[in-house]
Length: 306
Image (cartoon, rainbow, N blue to C red; front, top):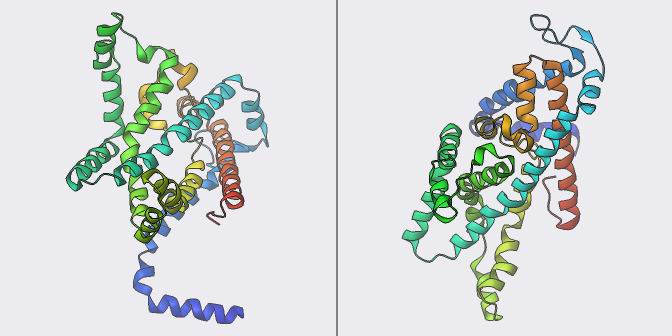
């Protein structure tokens, strides 16, 4: 089809459904101003930024700030923490909504199912500040968890002062807060599976487990693949707000991640160019992960975002 004909076809579609396309105007403006516009600021990763001077930096320094964090042992400590926390988050929190949705799908009592769904959604709507406050209260020396610990062992544990406990506490809170909300998309995907497939499986003698394995999971596999690829883009962007509210210098060994390190270096120390270089490095890794997972998924499952 000639380019002119393509343009004419696009123009006719826009004229036909202009009311629907007009709804895209505000989201596009939002993305341009708050998502794509700030990307121009990445230039200060290559220029020396001086507070009060040009927003694009005063002097070109090339890869100076990249060399700084590559030779900075503190950066590699927080980078390792980020990889571990990101990996544990993907390994433990990503499958939980899928498992939860599959279990809910087997519940036959509609009232009980609605109650469990509602109760599991609620933590998602809680403010991060409230969630962090709850965690700190529960893990305090005189908190509810230590009350049980003292009942069985007699000795309380200073959870938030011991680095080895932070990852367990963080991952557990992430599962609790996101499991119910994450299951919504999978529950919606389950409703699109044709009932005749289950009937055919039952006729072939498949029990509930085999029906789940050979009918249900393949039915929601496109949703799983899509969400996995999208989540890989934020693999290194481990929950900044929650960690910032929970961590302290005593547990930096396991709790300090790239985002909190950027906050201290960029905002706390006003070293904006250095922080931008690290942030750009993090974004590039996230982009590489998205393309890699998409390519692997396309090769193994023949499903991908593009």
